[in-house]
Amino acid sequence: MTLQTPDGIGRVGVWSGLLSRSDTQFQDEQKDAAAELDELGYGAIWLGRSPGVARAVPLLAATRRITVATGILSVWEHEAADVAAQVAELGEDAARFVLGLGVSHGPMTPGYARPLQKMAAFLDELDAAPVPVPRERRVLAALGPKMLALAAERSAGSHPYLVTPEHVARTRDALGPGKLLTPELGVVLDSDRMRARETARKFLAVYLGLPNYTNNWLRLGFTEDDLADGGSNRLLDGLLVLGDAVDVRTRVAAFHEAGADHVAIQVIRPDDTLPREEWRTLAAALPLA
Image 1 (tube, rainbow, N blue to C red):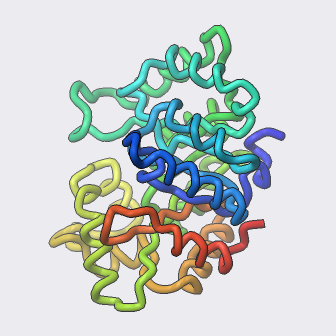
Image 2: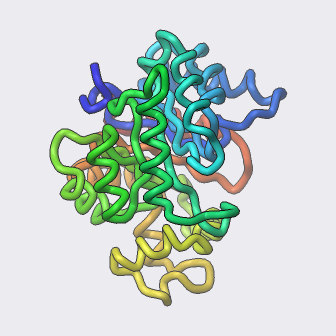
């Protein structure tokens, strides 16, 4: 089964930066959490914070069914030849691995220039490796039209981050049929609206300084005023879900109706701990099958 078949990774997955941390003392909890996500029925684990392929290895070993993906691996921080070799070393587990690739952001990357050309060159090297990474096992973190065109031509599809249902619909049109669309969706499960907005603004702060995101939000109809002072309520409500599991289910349905094959849920908490209780709650509320 190729990645282009939507049920290959299910309808809903989990996106987590914490599951990609390399802290030795944290790894047993990571593996235990991954095994539980597998049992709960989620289709994929997307590893945030630009992880290398190696971060997927212990989670693949701890699970039996679920797909593990990089969400995303920065092409500026890794050599394509090394990445291809590491994917080849996964052996049979490579069938449950997805290589998510992205070009990161200028303010975070020394020497950042010509990101589209950088991605194309990285893909060239993956194709030229002794054991190439198949196109159907890689996706690109594409937001703008040129990167989306590259994703459609040279990968299984796109894994966009911090987007709206409108962006999902535009992306589906740009990718065309038969390509995988797996947007991330951030959620704050908190019935206290004021506290939820505080958590959301703290989370969003770093992204408000990254032009790849802010330019995309402006293309979607948000204004400079929406981007000021930590983000307007309109921006928060457009990009994230603040509320309960029913609210999350409603937005996930909107993403699917707009053309998403799979939605990667990122639970946002005010502390830096794995949101395992929230994952359980959402597993009972969302269409995982």
